[in-house]
Amino acid sequence: MVSSRRWWTLSVVALAQLMVVLDSTVVNIALPSAQADLGFTNGERQWIVTAYSLAFGSLLLFGGRLSDLVGRKRMFIIGLIGFAGASALGGAAGSFGVLVGARALQGAFGALLAPTALAVLTTTFTIPKERARAFGVFGAIAGAGGAVGLLLGGYLTEYFNWRWNLYINVFIAIFAVIGALIFVSNAKRVGPRPKLDIPGTLLVSGALFGLVFGFSNAETDGWDSPLCWGMLTAAGVLLVAFVLWQRRAKHPLLPLGIVLDRNRGAAYLSVLIAGAGMFGIFLFVTYYLQTSLHYTPMQTGLAFLPMIAMLVLAAQLSTNIFVPRFGPKVMVPFGMALGVIGMVYLTRLGLDSTYAADILPPLMILGFGMGSIMPASMQTATLGVDRHFAGVASAMVNTSQQVGGSIGTALLNTLAATAAASYLADHVPPTAAVAAQAAIHSYATAYWWGAGFFAVGAVIAALLFRRIGHGISLANPTADRERETVAAH
Image 1: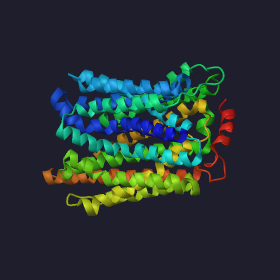
Image 2 (image 1 turned 90 degrees about the horizontal axis):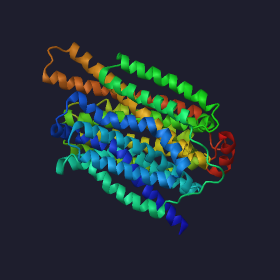
Image 3 (image 1 turned 60 degrees about the vertical axis):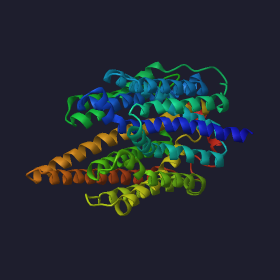
Image 4 (image 1 turned 90 degrees about the vertical axis):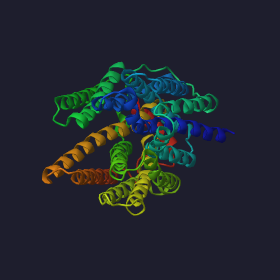
């Protein structure tokens, strides 16, 4: 009965995680329809996405720590209700300002919900075999949620209305709240309740805001924008100040021992790099399918389905068979290597490419690669952490993925735009055929850089992750948790 309750808890947590992850892409599909309905400009359009990512990225560590202090079940339910309410507000928005405000609220409650969901999973599954299976499911959702969002967004926009891309969260949240009330346990704190690190929270939230805003600004205004470099510089200063403060704070927001552990640090870096690469896959393959091959939104979503299937398959094989046997030191570099192969394969795409021969194989390779990277990294990132810090350790996973996505989107977009401009300058006059080839050239440039991201990730993972039997053991996280408690305090 207890074991059955744990698996129902996984279902509830997976539902919440899916809602947060797919929201980042499901709204993108709805943007053109929302723009036509509400009448905002192309320049204003980016704020529908940016408002969410700014609030989400900057408040993740705060949300993770709050779940440690207030209680995970309570914060989980608050996050679900708040996210659903913000989604309903956005779906009913009659103006651009209301929609942007609703998206910012979604991001804020998502920052409470995402790390809390992972922390619930971390503290619920402590038996190694069950933990591996649970993280396999969770990692698959984290990796595949974006593609599911493309499919769902295409269906809702094409057959209903763009507003249903937001309203759908209300229905998901209702089921998740009912499940949380029944199945998620509320562990009682032992000992005195530590205080919230207010200075640390302000420093790191400001730093993360600067990072996400700086990279988002680079995407729209270019890397030479003073606002871009100003925000990135401020973020760097605030991050340094945050680290210095954490070394002396009595109740640190993020005990440095959590991040400085070699295995855990490697896991966070792997999630960051994989996040940057994944955005390249979804962003540019989506552009290519819709603008170059003229797929409908629904067809674009369906095109990603085999990638999702391979990701889920790889996640289950990795966490149940390969990670316990070989460890993340083998599995994460293996997944990164597949990422390189898949990205290089995508560089061959042209205007006459076919789905079966040219698009399907690299998507399946990339899906298997991400299914090898994400579950192993997530499991290692939260392994052995004292339960009092499970929320903030989990938040670091989401933060890594969010920052990686922001970096990847800004950097790859800039590189692709530069490549397109250079191609047009070299091929005059700029006819429609030349413009189409310039787009293909820009996508290929982004894929080559994406391959470079994965290659660097493979080297970092191979060098930093310890072999099984050295440091944290995947088979005995409980013993390590006792050591982590001492280090954290």
